[in-house]
Length: 258
Ligand code: FE
Image 1: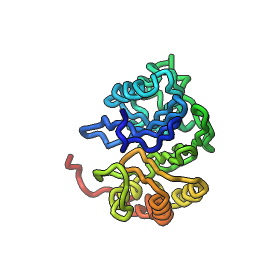
Image 2: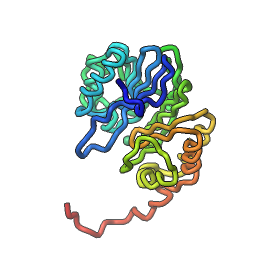
Image 3: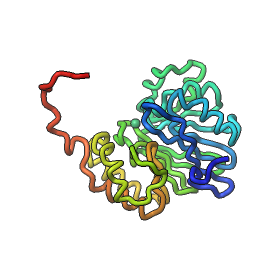
Image 4: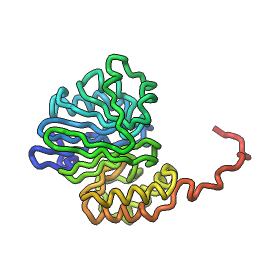
């Protein structure tokens, strides 16, 4: 049974579930999301080896492992892709990755028997079918990876934003107070997003969508139009990356202390 707080949306035939958090130790906290439509599933950014077998049995118990249709990889980072070989070897699913990373992912150790089931999504994104619904694979390049995708689900109106909207250090699953929440997001966005120009272009696209929930790959979920709009406004104004870091390009003067 999925606890209520991990069900982001459920109308009986379509579910959006935040899977159990099996990460621990020094791993960055990561959310693994799961979309089900009429018994067919897509797992998003399934992470590394330590969480793989737990997630596999959790989704096997929910829909049966052969009904996993897609494994979505928003970008090439290890907290997203590291266990891809296991996922491909144990399921019949197709993996979707930004086309930019298709030749880099095999370095995680992908068997030649399954390598052709990793499909590259072009830079402009695409539309895929899951069950009886269509999901949008959106371009989210440079946020933070140069090839980066997101998923918009028009049934639940959830935007899976990947690293955008990531927060670290808070102890809640859903954002209650956006102003209080900013401090948990700020450091990541200022350092990982290369420039505010990227944010502005993305916000313009995102405002065309009817978004009820923004579900990032790290930290708390933003639910409700008020919080979603506050987040878009915040991004639209944020200075980040090279906008604020230009003076880092100096020769170092201090020895490494380990
Ligand atoms: Fe990342």
